[in-house]
Length: 547
Image 1 (cartoon, helix red, strand yellow):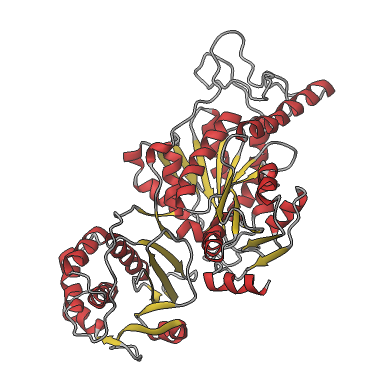
Image 2 (image 1 turned 180 degrees about the vertical axis):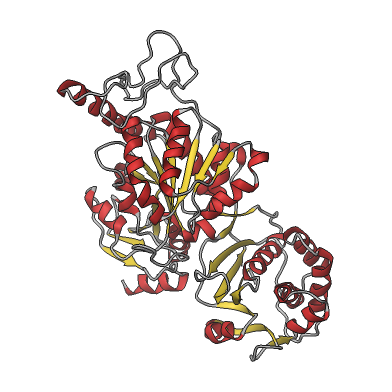
């Protein structure tokens, strides 16, 4: 076999997430590329939780509807998912509480006999799975040691009991020669990419699915020499980040739709005062609370039009962890280069899924901002050809003004006609400057058969499934990395010979398709999904065939 899919399920508190993480580590050590999708309701205890771990001989970022092995820690997992088990698939289940056909193991009894909490059933079942896959126990032990931080010896002991269970059917999963890769979530890639670009402060109020950016940077703030700050609400978050930027500190905020809604006035302030701040917007279904632990791409227009008035915003959207790392760094550098708010659009699927990463930390670094040379009279908003004025900070022997009011070059408020016109034009020049700057940068990715006359277009995490299907069906796939300024010319170049253009999105209204049309690019078909779940490989293939 060159790939395998495993679903592990139980209720919140059963250790499904940790179980999936250990499975991914196992496949990583065997030379495969793991991808982990997590599905859970907004409950601390109870509810149905599951994760799908897919391991393939090539990088993957999507799942099939079917899987090869089902690990059931409760009866609900069997009842909900057994119909999606591939023919000849295997169910590993807790025979003390679950009725099923397959490999029944007394997981509860083994845990209790060892005076351990029931959460260790995930570790015991991991041992059983390793036996099914003919994996040597040393590899099992190494995976547990790398993932478990308490009672390690006890966990290894019960895993060995599971490994020793006599089973009939086994799966021959060959070991590949690929080296192990870093396993990382989209949120962690965003966090570390920004740090490599000089991030010094992350300010956030926890909101799923962006919360782990704060958790990760708070855990490592001493080693990374940054500040991770949790203020009282999202309005305070945005204003604090802008205050830090005013003082010369590279800052970033992380939130989801509801929190971002509270920040929009601050985004407009950043446009007027020219504060360089990065806003991470991790999308989930709305409106209002919506479905808070699931995924969506419904905030594209919200990001593009956030904040009142007319000013440059830069909007980027990564599609996997490698892009998340790179574009997070780019976002921070662009914010400081052009002194404007930058929005990085991610979503729950990218934010919380685990990927095998291929990025190199050395590929990003802080880029210099336009800093005042400390000669002559300082004008915070001095006119410049590219619209970008030199920056000075408190303590630079200059009077550094910042204001939400229209102003002159010094930052002194005005309501006179000429200064208003001059300052509006100055800020709008930045859009021309960023377009010129991006001309030789990669703003669009192309995959699949580049000569195909059928073109699939997708953005964000949806490119994972689109890329794989385009390669399988010999089609062309396009992914815009920048959504503002929109790379119209580069997309037109890629679709000039297309007979059919199909846009694929995880929202109900086809927002990218509308954006394409607004920029003069015709779309023939739109494939949408908006139930909070990502598009699977089977779904997309069937819908494309139906088109």
